[in-house]
Image 1 (cartoon, helix red, strand yellow):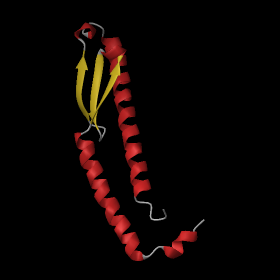
Image 2 (cartoon, rainbow, N blue to C red):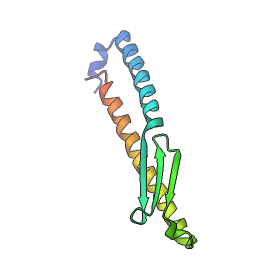
Image 3 (spheres, helix red, strand yellow):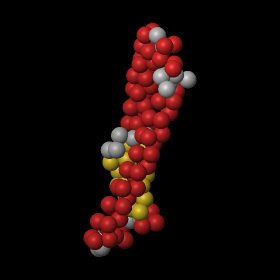
Image 4 (tube, rainbow, N blue to C red):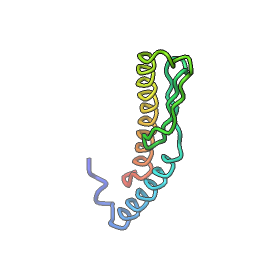
Length: 105
């Protein structure tokens, strides 16, 4: 299981850690600029979040102005949809970082 540990030297480990830190900084910057749009009600509510799970914008079709209960339900669904997209993106980024920086390859 740990057969490759004997071949790993401190210099390689330091390079891997440094590379991982650089990669994490790039991912964080990318997450600030990336946009994910969650939709509900066939698109009559749209919630836009960045890759840091911050809500950036909400668009609501005017037809919902008199239906507070539906608006509330659709907002929750739109937020959850956008959040699911952000989480999937974050998961993919984390998996890519780990596979690229694996010192045991």
